[in-house]
Amino acid sequence: MPRTLLVLTVAACVAQTGAPIVVLLAGIVGAEMAPTSDLATLPVALMILGTAATTIPASFTMRRFGRKAGFMLAAGYAGAAGALAAYAIMSLDFWLFCVGTFLIGSHNAFVQQYRFAVAEAVPGHQLGRSLSVLMLAGVVAAYLGPKIAMEMQELVPGALYAGSFLGLSALMGAAVLVLSFYQGDFSASGVGGGQGRPLMEIARQLDFKLAIAASVGAWSVMSLLMTATPVSMHTLDGFDMADTAWVIQSHIMAMFLPSLFSGILVDRFGPVRMIQLGAGVLCLCLIVALSDQQLMHYWWSLVLLGVGWNFMYLGGTTLLTKTYRAGEQFKVQACNDFIVFGMQAIAALSSGYLLLNLGWDWLIYLSLPMLMIPMALMVRSRQLLSLTGNQKVS
Image (cartoon, rainbow, N blue to C red; front, side):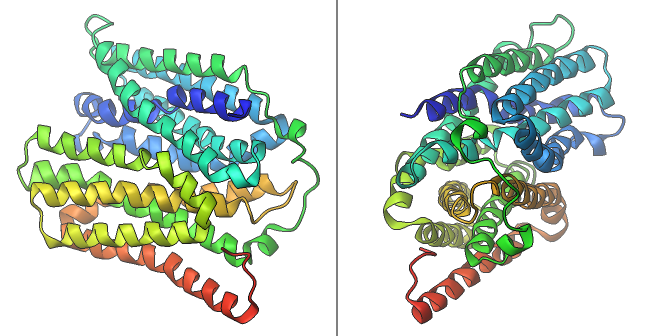
């Protein structure tokens, strides 16, 4: 395993714990401290907005100072944000708590760049399986974050959950320590350089459009359904929390465990076919979700949602790396992540409103256009292949 891949995978196991901790606890803390019940989930929403708002600054910070400096800086201020959130809980300051969750989300924008750092460090024929190894860190983070949060929730007397966010700070400190061994800066790997082609010229490539459409479709559909499922199951359909938690846990495992083999599939069959497969799985997910709202329908649809997300996102990320030349990667990556995570934020923030005002079925119907765009682009790519015989897009 290349050193860069090893270091970033271990770092991701702890650096990615911030989001699960915030998702688990911020709504509960918000319900206790928010001035009105309508603002209870604002800390979670601000974490998502923090990621979307920092995608471009994260990319250009690393272009200026290097990936190692960017990764360590972000992990450092995420650790400070955890301490800030803990202090906010102790002082019952809701708005300060919101600042803390925004900064934790901001750190996630840097963590998303790990995959591009890996792409710069491994040979092209190993890229798919290398990204799969990195994505498997999500399984560890999804377990480790909530585990630490629950074990440390009573650490600070009289301030329940303040200790959980101090635990988050400790995990970010561990990430800084691991990242100190990182040696894969772009300046050392030969992928820096001049400005390259204008972004609009790069964006005219069909592969670029398909890569972004695939990642946007994967994240948006996943966010719409995953965010709405606990409300639909527990609040509207009356399932108990144990059943609801089982469905969500199964979904998270389904997002990351396919990485054991999905990278091999990308390297063998190409990113476009992987996007096709992911889109097909997500369409099947929507069919199951529409068919009924019994426990096993929720479970199957959320498991298929996780698998389809994995295939489409991995395929889209791999395809994107084929669209830029040396010196162009940072502006392309910034553009990609701003669009992808901006749309993901909109989907997550609108999910509850759409569910409560339009219903579960309409949530499914509104997911379809997000899949139709990459599917239409894939049809176009096949038409071009039939005309030119050029196999590049596959």
